Image (cartoon, rainbow, N blue to C red; front, side, top):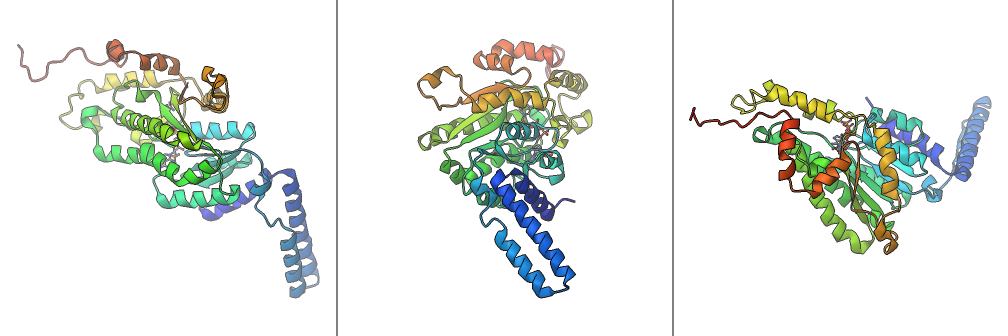
Length: 364
Ligand SMILES: NC(=O)c1ccc[n+]([C@@H]2O[C@H](COP(=O)([O-])OP(=O)(O)OC[C@H]3O[C@@H](n4cnc5c(N)ncnc54)[C@H](OP(=O)(O)O)[C@@H]3O)[C@@H](O)[C@H]2O)c1
């Protein structure tokens, strides 16, 4: 089981790999001094000599954090488990020269990132203690600054709107909305110090109703309302806030426990019992997508960091409030501009919903 000790080990290795050359050389010199001093001490079987050598090595080691000389832009990303969007974004930002702090609930899901030289942390966005611990570590490494926070961690929640298990939805809300709020509040001073950017990985379902997704869709719609207000409130302080309205991406989201749905899970009196199998089947087909997390990361990276918007002629640094990425996101963008009535019939057909059903009206 991965624990704090593992994390420290991985991160100290990462820090050694990710600092600029100057610091790297000092660190190498330091460890070389340490090794040779220890050997000498053993050879001479002299405790005093070993102690002196270690002290001398300690003096040679960099007294300042490697971060203080690291000029790369920094980005912290939540929910970076292997196979998901966060993991692909972490690698994309790392390749593009950012200093990436990648986090997830379990350290072992970040192994591929650690191997690439990315600094990794255990972080559960529903825990104040966990968020605080990462805040302290990131702050210590960056001198109290953060250029970008990407709130990506999220969980699905599936089931008919009339049959929502409120406790289940509350747990998902804890991640998809309150987790984001907790992160932003905790990291505000680091973001303010660098006039940074907050990015929320939202979903097209905040606009477009996806059948049996009302609980999840509601968390994302709430996130969108929060995001837009936060953007406004932070605008005087130079911190920008944006949503990525995400369409289909072939991540691990469908494997999450809260994504399960079957006839057995429905309440005995659910009105959807006769139709559930058809709808589940249609959902599977509709949700299938060929866009990989890596393709998604390539698609959104230039939009998060880039230029090219007409209003940037007048406000060069202004980032868009919303960008769209993933499969079906262009269609969803168009749908978001149209009255919802226009595509209700289309969605009913697409999800193989029953034709008009008159329950409780007898055979009139
Ligand atoms: N894939 C899509 O089609 C799609 C579409 C629209 C929006 N999105 C959004 O994109 C984001 C990333 O999802 P994904 O598709 O990459 O799914 P994913 O592969 O399941 O990744 C979700 C990540 O969130 C993490 N997470 C869950 N609960 C957490 C918590 N309490 N604290 C910290 N991390 C937590 C997961 O960690 P564990 O591995 O520990 O569970 C995982 O790393 C989510 O916000 C999702 O709503 C995805």
